[in-house]
Structure formats: structure tokens, C-alpha cells
Amino acid sequence: MTQPIANSDLDAILQQTVGLWEEMRGERVFITGGTGFFGAWLLESFVHINRILGLNARATVLTRDAERFCSKCPQVAADAAIEFVQGDVRDFAFSEGEFKYVIHAATEASAKQAAEEPLEMLTTILAGTERALEFASTHGTKRFLLTSSGAVYGKQPPEIVHLPESYPGAPDPTQAGSVYSEGKRASELMCALYANTRGLECAIARCWAFCGPHLSLDAHFAIGNFIRDVMAGGPVKIGGDGTPTRSYLYAGDLAAWLWTMLFRAPSMVPYNVGSTESVSIRELAEMVCNALGSDVEIQIAAKPAGGSISRYVPDVSRIKRELGLRQTVSLEETIRRTAAWYGWRSR
Image (tube, rainbow, N blue to C red):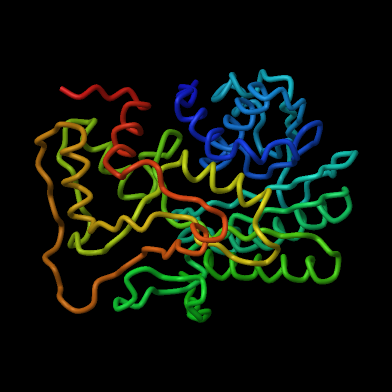
């Protein structure tokens, strides 16, 4: 069993979205990927806000393993507003009744699956998105939210410090490593087709990198790995040369931004969802150590090779300007809250 998300985080999500929830009163929302990192935050915040505001709303959650989620997050599973449907996102049986909202948050990034089962990843993304869209278009859905990815832009040019939604780049379709990013691009196109032919309003969230409770510390995310290394007593291991530049948005802000987009984002207008607070991987390792009050050794596997530096940092001026959203939790505080959720106590 995992710890619940702190009430202070859930209250902060409500504070950022408080004027939007009346539309959910008495309604139903269908969520795919509800048991992943994104889904855990969406569900815990939904349960909290639904209870605080007395919305009498209900959420139906598609999962491949309902029993596992119930043991992982019993506080969510036990809530009367939550119903689980067990199945594969590619061919799940349709639930009965109308659902005003659908959130398709399945198929989060997985470097392991992309490397070992790329065809499985691609078919899951494509068939899963089509199935979710077909479900929405036949169940009275008003708004559909797709969690896409910043990977749809392909490699970020080093001279572009913050990548905007208008950037016309794309992944290389001749490279097998593009399977996740091309799958997300095709998912956006699928949304456009359903918007044009079925009149479905589709919000497109291009999600970048995140950190917070429920993030796996053993996946391919450097920030989680570094927190794990410090908690284990070190050393903090950097697999490359430490020069790539990244940014991380706190999961509480992520949830608030996604809920806002579900209710308010114009159809088929993509929004970057992420942080502009950029940091090199080496600086990130140092920040994790400092934030957690640790002096463990930092080991860097390679020396800087020179040339252009890899960047993965969004421009979020559009979502700030048009939807009034902003980052409320700093990267250092994000690190502290994540480690604390996993049981870390600074020495």
C-alpha cells in the first residue's frame, strides 16, 4: 500500500481549479490509465475535490489489474464515487450510460517497453487512442482530454531554449526509437479526425517531464533515480556526461493543469504542460543532494563530449497566457516532497 497524497497538495489543486468544477456536478468521467503516475494524481484529486465540493460526480477507471490498484491505493478504491472496469485499453468493453468527460491517460512513457516491445507499445498507443475516442463519441461525451507528449516535436534544437507549440519539427520515422513519439503524434491526428467528423471536443496536453509522489524511482527518469540513490546512501550515479538539460513540473501542478485543460482548453489547440525551470543533469544531481541534506558522492560515467547539448525544455507561455496557469512548486521543493512521500527524513 502506498501513502495517500498529502491533503495540502490536494487542497492546492482545488485552489487552482476551484471555479471549474460546477460543470462536473452530477456527471461521470471515464479515465484510461487511471492507475499510472498521471492517473493516481487525477484520481486522488478527483476524490478529494468531489468530496469537498459535494459534486456527486462519479469516475469510471479502466485498468488492467483492478485488484492490484485496490491494494496500492485503497483510499481511492474504497470511495463510492470510483468504479473500476478491468480490461485492455485496445479492446475494453464499453460501459453503459453517458460520460460527459473522457481522459485518455494510458500509455505513459516507458523506455524499457520502447526498447524491448516497440510494436506492443505502438499498437497500444494507436489502438488504445482509437478505442477511447470511439467510446467518447458513442457515450455522449462533451470533452475528451488526450495526454500527448513533448516528444512529438522530435529532437529539440540546442539554440531553442524553450520549445513552443508552433515548432514544426518531428521525430525521425525511420528510427525505431521514435515509436513512442510517433505514436503520440498519430494520436493527436486521430483526435483531429474525431473532432472533424464526430464533433468531439478534444483537448491536447503535450506533457513533458514531471516529479512527485507516485513517480517510480526505478524507471528511466533521472530525477527519480537520483532521489533513490540518495535514499539508499549513495552514490548518485549519472549514466552519461551530465550535460543534457531538462525541466520538471511538480505532479500537483500537472494535475491542476490537466483538469483545467479538460474543462477549458479549446478543441485541438495543443498546450505544452511542463516547467521552464531548466537544469543540467549534473546540476539536478547536485540539487537532489542539497535538497535532501545529503553529501553522498556523485559519480559521472563520462566526460563531456563537446558539441551541442541535448535539451528537453518547453515554452509554456501559451498555457499561462490563455488558461492562466503557472508553476507553483519549485524544483527543489518538488524533490523534497517526493522524497518525503517515500519516507525520507533529512538528517
